[in-house]
Amino acid sequence: MTETMTTSKADDPEREHLSDVDDGCGCTEIWEHMSDARDADGE
Image 1: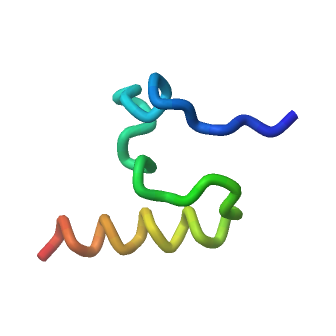
Image 2 (image 1 turned 135 degrees about the vertical axis):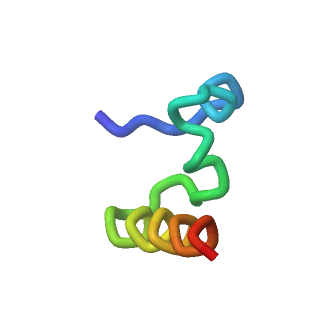
């Protein structure tokens, strides 16, 4: 079963760090997004 992010889920604090990741992206895209965000926080 594939889950898509609805507006209510996009506002979920546990998922907000992924709010700008495209629906349907794979593990690599999510990893890159989280890595970039972590790097930006460390600067």
